[in-house]
Image (cartoon, rainbow over all chains, first blue to last red; front, top):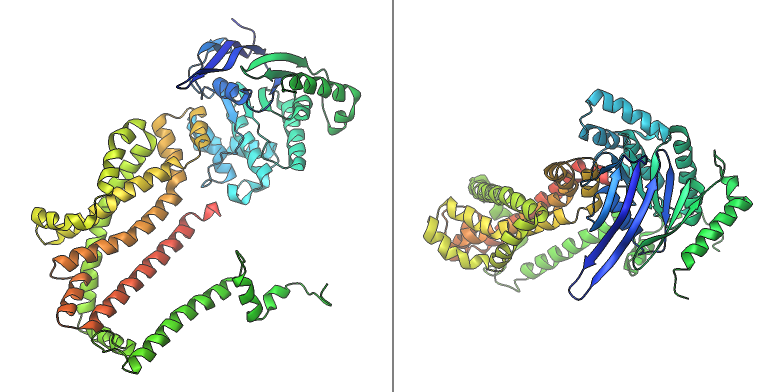
Length: 256
Length: 278
């Protein structure tokens, strides 16, 4: 039995085209402890989103194992909740109904689902907007509903694929603060994929840096910054140093 | 800087200014400006028509005056001919179109969602789609006679294949992440299709329906022109035989109005049903 919540052992993936086989991911091995927040950073095309999709069960892989609580995954499942880059809110349902949809899909009764959904919208500070349709919400609000939806059905691991990538810089910062606050209050296991190093350092306990061609984990950084974390932390010497180290590690990968 | 620029000035701008804006490339203009311009087009055509027929520049047998057409239509409406013609055409459209729609929606969803059905059916549908409907008219008469069944069949052939492909496209356009979401929520492939993908595509499906309804009108009139004993197309052929140009043109105008009304109604229903997306 593995003591880790999420465990990747030697995961590899190849894409075969007519002329050649491309190795997208090779020998990815990493462990995520229970209630740990980890990020995966790397340049575009290094395979970090593919890695997340593999863990979510949305992509096949050719080698290795993905274990959740020591058990190998078979396709997607409710033990792994995904927050996609696009908000994926169903446009014909209100914010409240969107969260209820996820709960009802798991067989929860209507009355209970309504209460749980309401509670989770409050957590992302969208209580007053429960009755709004996605088209009536801003980009940041939509992504908050998507986070509430994923949190609501209590997956073992929350997987986030550049969830704030499409938001403007100010909204992005506010979302990071909200996410770190929720995480500190409710503790859950999170894996976040991002290309924003500052975001990764601010939110995570550990940061994995991926190299490309083929995609591998080339270094791991422990983010030993105190919690609870707030914006001021980003100006501390330790934060800046960590950010610089990670950036350098990523840059090794780029052609000069 | 203008000496005193007031807020909401644009609302009070004279029509000339607003018209100038409408002439600029990709410029915007208000709804009122749009309606005024659109109404002018119709008015100009009508005036031209009145002038041409009023001066006897064309023989009435080729182009009767608008007034005489209105009088003719009023007479036909009074003795019930107009209504019975319109209702028999409407009935044929409703049956033929409904049959095409139900089948095409099922096929469109299947080929849009499942690779097997796409491979099995899409090439065939593409092949039939390129056969002109007109070419089927003699065959359909051979198969089903000249009754309503033949009209249904022509409408069906004319719309089913086009609709199936357009519905397929509507289904394919639903972002992949929606389906992925459903799968991570533990829904089966079928549940993802019926609870997420199809509802997501509904606004587009409705638009496809609206557009293809226009074709159905074309096909019913075509079928009635060739062989029928009632309906709008039939009346137009009879009118031509007896040089009743006023009836023929009147009926064509009625067709245009019916099309405009159904189109606007379907657009209004779209706004009502899918208002959440705005």
